[in-house]
Length: 306
Ligand code: NAP
Ligand code: GLV
Image: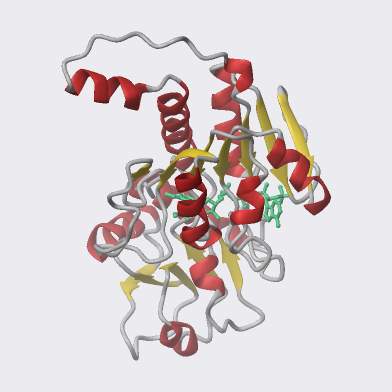
């Protein structure tokens, strides 16, 4: 069995070493133009040329949860695409989102500013039930994040495409429930995949439906958010702030207004990192299951877009 590795922005060598150790029966090599045909590929945002040349692939194993970069390519209709299922990302995402929600709710940024001025000043405690958190996307990550937020006793709402049931979470599904979901949320967390249906979903109309003084956390993809609409709603005071981990262009260009905006906290696409060891173990297990003809978890529905 031949496995080719083509991951933009990742050092190949440690992955090759790990994949060879996990799959000693396979020949694992890094892809280059003109490389021999492989049976399976381990990929992250490969170029179109890779897909055009590797016509014999049975499956592509994505080294991340989101497959939007892969689905932008012209793919052969027969190919199977498999995403990472958690592999250590869900707990990281839960940490990141809880940190951002709690920082906003407990006003730790205000305390930081006071302390920097040498001020010992207590603020009135906020009432938790007045801060319902809405989680867009109740998949592998959204579900884990919702459970973590419940541990802190926040009221949690969730929105998904098909109906879901999560203990302690008020669940909404589909476009008809979207406005009700938004208008009952004071903190909005985006964990949707980027698809034709969800692109630009965080815009002036939708963000205006949030309760006044709302807070936005985007940890999914930059193209979900209309940047200028966010800035306008922050400047008008309808939104209190935002934590953004993902951007339309990454790295975020130096002149972008998000860098210096006093109500925006940014991080460099780090909320849930691909962990090499866990990911290699998961991908190797899936390749072996695939070869045995067994069901493989995390198969992407290309028509649906995730
Ligand atoms: P997932 O398991 O595929 O879950 C996606 C969720 O979104 C599902 O609940 C799905 O509904 C819902 N959904 C999809 N389209 C929808 C629509 N049109 N309307 C309403 N709900 C819709 O994905 P995941 O593993 O949780 O990951 C989510 C995204 O997080 C990834 O696609 C990626 O973009 C992003 N991500 C970011 C980072 C980072 O470091 N910033 C790391 C990992 C992932 P159903 O339940 O009905 O299918
Ligand atoms: C990271 O953004 C991922 O999709 O895994």
